[in-house]
Image (cartoon, rainbow, N blue to C red; front, top):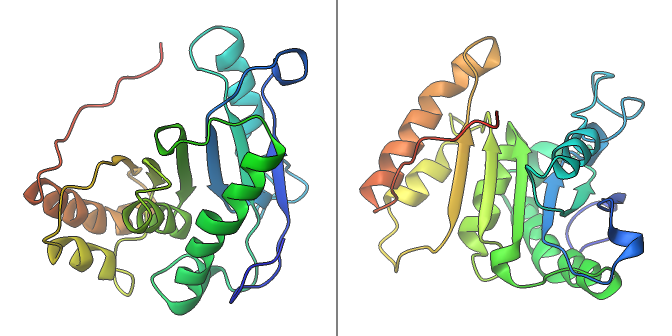
Length: 210
């Protein structure tokens, strides 16, 4: 697919188990770095996230509702696309005004914002946060895994700190590991959580799936 101000990219759609045998509509999760989430042959490190296997397994045992997953591939402009730059704003606009309407028109989705989420890791975690922050009319939830909130991408923290508008009706999941690159990213996560709480966001403990 093409979008104004960004490079063309492939988009892959995963459909839940009941899609072909039912008429119901489904929530949609938009994921960045689409090459990495389904197929080890296209994944950056040769190991994929196994999003399809994980979703299928949890759905079949009743621990997750059925959803559609849309994987949006990255390009050589990944760093710019996934940060608060001109290309990043063009990428966010592409998701909100072109890709989502296309998905809603061609698949049985629940198009309302409360059924629309985005997720990614590292720079993908950063852009997930930026998308839900800048387009809360379209996306209501963001999963930010090991998000890059540190310099030179800490403008997202400053943006929240300087925000004085109405309350954002969004839900955020921010998760970070404890080793390797994640240990470097932790200070950015701590800073973001602090300013979010200052703006009235309530922190809740996550509930593990047994």
